[in-house]
Amino acid sequence: APAPAGGPNATPTPGLDRLPPTQRLAHFIRQFMVQIAESGPDCHHSRIMAREMIEPTQALDHLVNGFIRPQHLWFQGLVREMLGPDFSNEEIRLVANSVVSQVLFYRHCGAVIERLQGSHPLEQSNIEGLATHITEFSLGAIRSFARSRRRSAPVPARTRKSVLKSS
Image 1 (tube, rainbow, N blue to C red):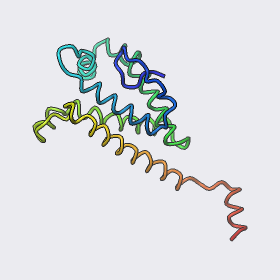
Image 2 (cartoon, rainbow, N blue to C red):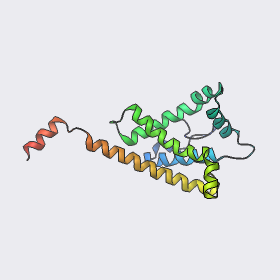
Image 3 (cartoon, helix red, strand yellow):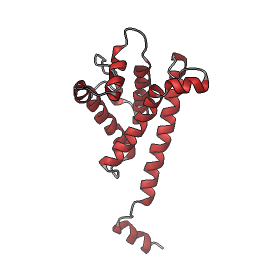
Image 4 (cartoon, rainbow, N blue to C red):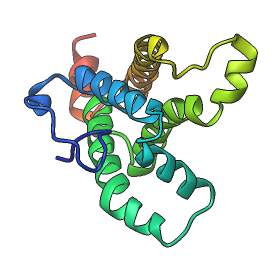
């Protein structure tokens, strides 16, 4: 699996694939927050990615195919693992995109948030709190979707007959 939310030279986190899905989600979100919060003169990776998303060049295809797509596929697999098999590929993509968009919101709207709240959301002191919030919010939504789908799933005929006989 690719190194979730790491830069192009990131190394995979040892044992990440053995963690429960909720912990892998928390790790992914935190690492993604750290990555997009990079600043300073030596932090070209995040700036190039942001620029390519706003004003795409031919380099975007390389970024998508070599970096973003593998991570997104890994993340969709994690979302599927948490939601279960009753969700379509499109539903999985929508949930994965919703989680990712929460993280990206703080990058792309940071200047507005700073003016509204007095500090930039991606200051180092805010990263843990934001990552925890996004993780908890996302887990709540994922669990709600999974419960809703289980409740609305049709009862198999064999189970219905045995329930009716025992009534």
